[in-house]
Image (tube, rainbow, N blue to C red):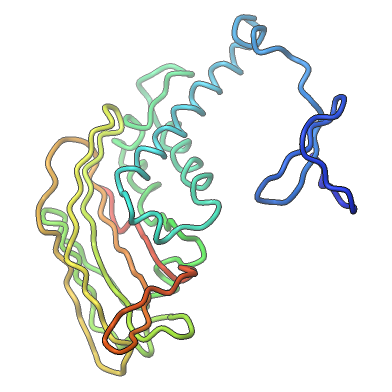
Length: 249
């Protein structure tokens, strides 16, 4: 794979070269020489079919999680979030010790203790990992989803963007069944805190315990605002916004 570097920028196919635009810029690659029909039917490509099936399953599992979280994801993500989450789902799928290669599933992998550790700590916005934005410890009540944050000083223990006068904290308690796709989620009330030298120790408790089976996922979200004449305005760039997987049970 090569990058295009010149005055004339091309997109499309020219003879055996394909020019296309990606997040890394304008790239060029040679066209593949094996037909889809052969890949789908030739015994020589059985490993390719197995890999393709598991890749599609991992991608679908990542989409399930993103959709279950709804708008929280759109407020705190980076441009490679989907591909990073896909890599996590692929690792979870690899832990499936029940199904044969080509049919391994995330639902079986995340049921393993090591699987829960793989998803725990995931930051949907790699530009703002929780540990670099909020310098305080958390404690979780897994039964209720309540997250208590140890006492901290916002001016000293929060990394905030220029222009921010306030930030918000919100927790989420998600139940997601990766096998069936069923999900239920509960949120805590949003707590808005001024960036001032005043100690705070918020506790964020979801308004309900989600129902259903599946994996319990606890998350913490942080957003930044500028308050003008009593009105809170979201900072548009979202570069410092956080969405972090606190625990998986």
